Length: 421
Image 1: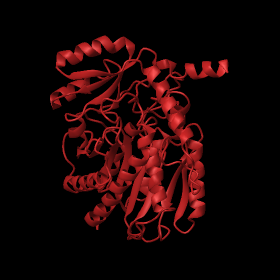
Image 2: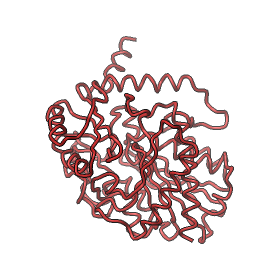
Image 3: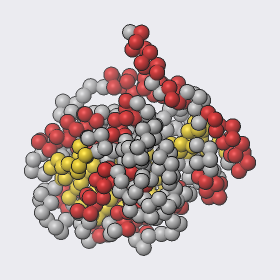
Image 4: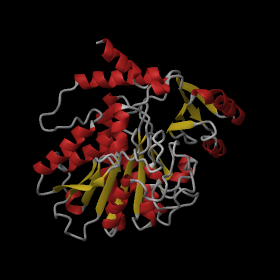
């Protein structure tokens, strides 16, 4: 028992002394200045602030005084979110464990849709779903991760992907390891297209490709070691102290030019070269193989309650900005039909304008640049309400988020079908 206590107590110890802050820039100028200082102060942006919404920023102990002085110099409002990150992570673990124990698993599913999901559970669910739905569902593998895990995706179709006139909807989640909430949303979408199919038009009109966990190595690492790990787990730099790259900075679209780091130890390290990561190559190959038919690509992230579209690498709109915005608004309206009043309403707009920073090498920009007409990044809700502590969406809200998000994506798919055909 003493050994178990010591093990639990040792978890998250790398975050002793760290603090997190609510940071609320009031103008685009303040937002841009904040982002430009992120490397200087070793900031880890957990929830990206916008001009309308405060974000949550994690700060190393050695940088806290200088960080606060800089905020005050810039006139940016802030407050302490969590005073002791390690202690709060321990509390988050207790909340998640307690919630898990209070749930009873559905008889019809190997996967809980009202809790965070283990990798092994997800793999079992994908296999069993394909077995239960042989006429519509095929489990595919897109290679191996750096640590040898299969990179899985499901193809869902009433015509075995043979009807070349049907548009494809592509959904992925979990490219950033710590963004847990996207994964149950993706598996819930699978559920609503297979075992609990009620909206048959969505299969009659579209083929679907769902990638529930793009980055399984990183996801497992966040579950077992470092809750805030973001990157892959590759070792292309031969630096065992600083492994991995940000797979969402590794795509071939203005790679390594904006919003990235060339330091392998940084969270936004873009990799040693374009598509150096198995995970980014995995998504690239799915996109390229189905490019002629993909109408809508949605990549699920967290958190922030934003829906953004290209471009990310520059301030400027895509030639298809009206269509992108229309689908984004349609998704928001679908979400709002089920949203709780304490959930913030989503902001919709181009990535560079909504986030106030430039990012290169992202999957949505890459897909759009090579011909996918509609590509959206959906950043799911996080802390509720704004004043709450903790770093995970409380698991009691997971069912809410998966339900409302599916309603939005279903509406967005229908709107995409109208615009593309």
